[in-house]
Length: 441
Image (cartoon, rainbow, N blue to C red):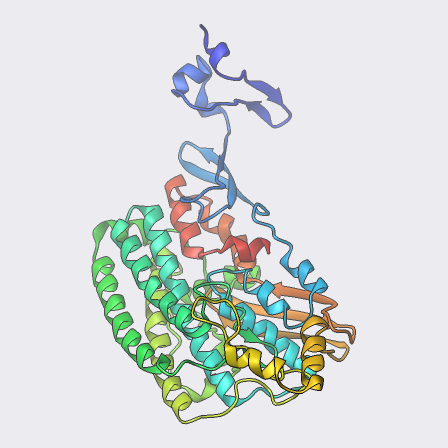
């Protein structure tokens, strides 16, 4: 049996000679062909681990040095933005929460804030406080997944186990409040699906203490670890000018030295009234992104501690007091995330006939939103997350488009990878922290 019986033969193309291989030693595959005269093009991905999800990279190599890198997306395309056009405004929250599935509550918030801007409605203060608190818990949860998956891809398995353990504690809080661990549809146009359970704030205080210890432990574990340092320092560099020219935001931009955070530069939900800092570093490499994200988790804990005190002092509704937008009786989600409470069913079914008819029309058809278009940006875990929402005056969105930071930030892949080693591509992608569901949406 010859090598031609095992491997696909080489062929000449306008780009040069191409070898199709599925394994084996280079000597057996190439025979007498001089490898150093050939351009080597490889596909990396799409698979977990390695490319941080279903992301495909097409790399050109000279030895182990990357000479070109192209990003291929679309393997997780779900058509969420288009599907939102065929549902009413409230149902849109259940769609956008599935885009960046690690930042569900940010998607729900920015979409709801855009719809509310079109409506010209003011959300109750208690609902805004809970939104802000939930987003900061979600920011910490998302950063834990970044650390866990990045550690797994680089071989730091303790970072993976500790990171996912800490994230589970975050999801316990989500389940307590929304009834679900992911894909909540908890934040809706006009407010929230329901108020906090009675035991929520004491449990969140306990969670803060637990998170503070988890952050200290993992920081102490990794910050002085020689292998972790060598795998991150000086790898995947991109400066402020490169970030700005590519539209890169979030921890990548702040790790290059620019303290751009929409919570400070363009405040919303009252962020300007909270005491917190915007962590930065000037390295512009994977190590600086590690430093910035760990510091951001600490700052989020500071914000959550402050907002808890305000929630306790701010009673009231969590949905606008407008019968054309809010349901006649507030939906109460069970601990299993399903069904309505008996009190809710009783109020709807045994109340007035008018209330039942109105509830039926509001749930099936939805409310109308004045014609117009808006863009609302917020600071997500990966950078600027914006919602461009267009209404034609009907009960369904005419257009919903998200400015998704994962999609934008992935443009920096080539700049961070070219000239480096193929092994460093893994570290660079992990430091970008893309969520492909958000990228492909």
